[in-house]
Image 1 (cartoon, helix red, strand yellow):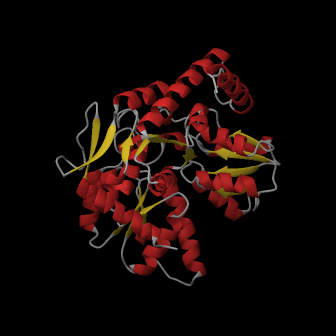
Image 2 (cartoon, rainbow, N blue to C red):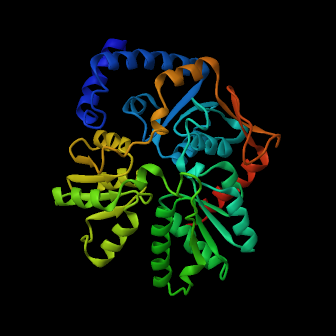
Image 3 (tube, one colour):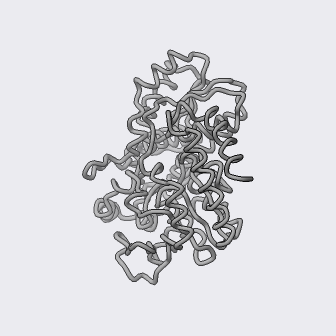
Amino acid sequence: MEAKGLATEWYDLFSRHAADLYPGRYTRDKCLQLAQQALEIRRLAAEKGSTIVAHNYLYPEFHELAEKVGDSLGLSFYVRDRKAARVDFESVYFMGATAKMITGDATRVFVPDSSEVLGCSLVFGTDHAWLENWKAANPGGILVTYVNSDAYTKSISDFVSTSRNTDKIIVHAVKTFPGRRILVLPDKFLGFVMKQRALEALAQEGVSVDPDAIEVYTHAMGEWSACCYVHEKIGDRGVEMMMDEHPDAELMIHPECGCASSCLYKLHAGIIPRGKAYFLSTEGMVEHAHRSPTQKFIVATEKGMVYRLRKECPQKTFLPVSMEAECRYMKANEFDKLLASLRDDRLEVVLCDDCCDPKRPYEDERVIHIPRSVAVRARTGIERMLSVH
């Protein structure tokens, strides 16, 4: 397809599904520019043998360009299973790093900018010294680490988990390692919700456990407070207002949201009726939207997710809980950066022979290192997660 035809197609698509999400962004001229860049990206990707994958939270043009759109771990497994020789991983940095640790030397992994620009408040807010002190103070303690974390933190963890299964991993850890303390990190909101769900599941199975033995990481580090800075701002008041305005809608809540704990309490107390609110991962949101007979949904996560939901279920209505729910790190991904990465083969995520500090790995304008021993230990935590059913 020529650029003008693709630009027209994208202008119509973005006008239908993204005009309110990104007001003024998708003019005809902008869509023509994006279409021209997309054709060049596709040419270069074919030349380099690259598979392009993109996270749900990216701008709509990435949804249209990528071979696969999804969540971080799902994309990593997709790349592994596809046996891609090269992948350009459009997301925040730690997600590309996770893909490299999973695929190892089989796949060359590229990200379009530095680990700082493509950062994450959960990564920046993780205090490695605090974790090491916790482990020293709790011999045999179990670290359950959410996949949204840096490579070193994964490497010192017993289990890596997701927003879909952290509660199941906690239950498994309690039953497999009775009497040991458990630390759930690095997101406190997800941690509190998953701890409560795990305690409920254990009670149903008749397993007795001291709730205080399951600790949630709440340590503040600098400007970061053990949470996603985007989800933190999705508070109770905004959710309540949206539910009042749209009483016929179901609420889909990502467990990282600042409102998650209170919404769980309100659900149990009957303040929010059963069947009106669901705690879901991003992929869980897509599955629920397809399955539910409801025609209207309030979406409590980064607003880039709304574009995918609208496109996959065009007959239904999806409302972002807040237009301010936008991640500057995810949105740092742009077509011009991807073009530069493809042209110049940068920045490549590489496994080094433990040549650098695992907590502050080497990085320059062409490569970002992950010590090989760190990758091996991190992959073990992921494999342990996959063994839990």
